[in-house]
Each structure stands twice: as structure tokens, then as C-alpha cells.
Length: 500
Image 1 (cartoon, rainbow, N blue to C red):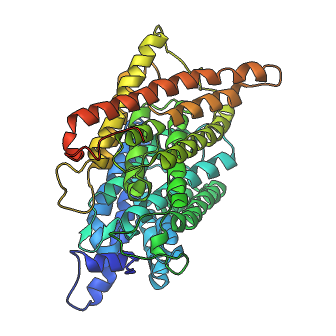
Image 2: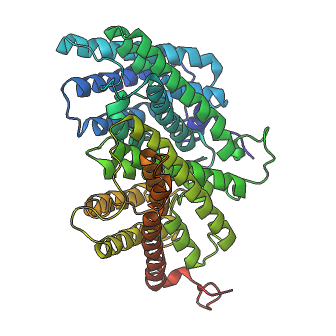
């Protein structure tokens, strides 16, 4: 198997290949790019924090990252974040000889951005929780580590992985995936940490505002998140590390082993469910938009590993189409791992609900709505999610002109935005049995006491109703797909859904 794992080697196989030897200006260009890109990101963060609208601040930062990564990727690889550089260097995806230079350029760019907004507004941005009575230092470290991990993990999977960037067929979604992490993590973490996820930004903001202690906590969490990403990445991309794992065949024929697929589904589902829950805990004004962004970036990151289901209803729909994409045993294992990840995520964000203001309300119909309206809403919009997945992520119609599907993550994530805003006031817009399990577990753990622990556990039954409605939506999606996509099945009937 060819080994072209560094970002420089990926660039060398793509449209940015250079024929002329590098001169001084070309040698300096990557460092200048990292300086300029990090400057732009930190300056935007500062402006948003000082005079921006909390409803749109994370989206503004996310699209700044998106534009900067697309703009500077051909020159420097578009790291623009010391955590990303550290993670890439840790897995051998970036040369150690350039690592120090990148880190210095990024930190200097961060300082320049911080000094610029300080000069314009005559004020600095302080690190630390906006509400110091609710959050402790370890809450800051956990949140910054979680979403810095997500940024590094998504970056490596979308930009540095072999199969997501095959020779002469590099993907075009990489910057969308990286930028959308700031939407996914920005909204739920904004009231806790201010959503930094970048050591260069933390250092610049901390020094200019003289928040020395908080600067250390932020950087500790961010560097820790980068390290965890460097540990987890080789586990889901074993084809990138033939010296560690026994790998044979070409990239075109390689298929991840079952344990790798299950790990992929667990990680993706956990991050999605914990993002959903933290949006509730912190009363996010854009919960569906944040949750949808988490789906989008993780489908782009892990879609070629496990398929990127992250939802038992989607897995059920894929199994029911019976086209050899996901066998019944594999699908059952997916569902178990997805539900387990949902439960673990529920335990995780219940901690923040207890430390916060206990925003998690009882799972069930909201306001004046009843279970009938809830059931129909969850069924129909989960069917939309599953049907979109079947059509854009598993369909062969029409034949693709590239090896990589560039729109699947954005299309599937958009259905979460649609459903979340459309029925959020009815059912909460869960659309995923793993999310329902997480909601139930978090509700029990954040509200339970020794006196009423047995009574609280009965609330788990509500999540079973949600799950039944959502699985019914997955079955409906498979039925509609079968009717509308007859060309997916062989004319002799040998590939039609059937009972073995």
C-alpha cells in the first residue's frame, strides 16, 4: 500500500504539485500563511466576543476557519491551530523539523490578532467561565479538551487520511468539516469556556488580559485533546500505519475491520449525543444547527470507515434495504455500540447539568402537545434523516465521477437542522434512539437522589417510546427507498430485499 500520509505528500499528489525548486519566498510562505490565518481567526474571535451577537458568534468563527483553511491549505496545509500541528506531528503526518516553526508562527499570529482588537476596541478578552459560580477549572479543561480533540480528529480524518485523499482525487469538503466543528462545539460550550479550542488564541487572550492561571487551564485542555486525538486516530485509520497494523491490498479495495468500524460508530455517536445534550444544558439558541454540524463533520470524517451511521434508525434502514451494505450481524453490533455511546454521553453531560442550573427537563411531549403528535413527528422526521442517508450515502444513482462523495455529510446534517427546528417545540427533535437513551440517562443522573432513585429510573421508559417511533421512521425510509430506487436492485430479483 502506498504511504503518502503527510499533508505535504498529499499536496504533492494533487493539483498543488510544484515543479520548480523552492526559493526563499516559497520557503517562508507556509509560515506566513499560518501567521495570517491564525491572526484572522483570533481577531474574529475577539471581535465576536466584544461586540458580536451570541446567536451567531460561533457561526462567524466557524466560517472564518472554513475560509482560512480553504485559502491557506495549498500553501501550509491550513493548520492554523497549534493543537492541530501537535496532533499531526504526533502521528507522523507532519515533519518534526517544521513543527516548531509552525507553532511559533501560529502563536505570533494569535498575538497580532489579539493586539489588533485590543487597539480597536480598547479592551481585551478574558479567559475563564462567564459564570464562575457554576463552573470549575476542571469543567473548562474537559470542554476545551473535548472539542479540541474533535477539531484535531476531524482535521486528520478529512485532510491527512489516505482514503479520504486518494491520489488525484482529494476531497473538497475538508474545510467545511473542520469549520463546522466550531459550530458543533461553539454553541454548547460558549457559556462555559467561550469556545476557544486553539492554544494560540488562549495564549494570546490570556497574556493580553493577564489571566495567567486560566491560560494554563485552557492550554492544558487543548493540548490534552490534541494528544488524545493522536492516540485515537491510528485506531480508526489503521491503513495509514502499516508499521503498526497488518494491512494488505490497495486503498480502493481496503475495508476497515469490524472492531475499527465499531469504534468509529462509538466515537461519532458519543460526540453527537454529548453535543446535543450540552446544547440543552446551556440553553443554546441554535441547538439543531449545532447538532447538525456535528453530524456533518463526523460523517465526512468517518463515513469511509464505518459508513457514518451514528444512529440506530439509520442502521436499521440500511439493513432493511438488504443490498449487502450492512449485514444483519454487523448492523446489530452497530446499534449496540451506538446505544452504549449514547448512554455514556448522557452520563457525561449530566455532570454539567448538575454543575449548571439543571436545565434538563423531563423527556416527553412539550407544552400542550401529546404523545400522538410527538410520535408522528419523530417518526416522519427520522424517516427524512434515514431516507436522506440512504439516497446520498448508499445509492449508486447516478454513477459518481469521483471516488469520494462530496455532499453526503452536508445533506444528511441538513436534515437534522430541518427536524430540530421543525419539531423541537413538540418532542425536542431527538431523531435518534442513541440521543433518546442519552437524554434519559442524563435526566436520571442529574435529578436522582437516594430517596427517589428507583422512581427516577422509571423515566427511562419514555426513551423507549422515542426509540420505537424513530426506528419506525427508519423502517419507513427503507420502504420508500425500495419503491423509489428500483434500479438499485438487480432485474433478476437476486438483490431484492428478502427474508433469509
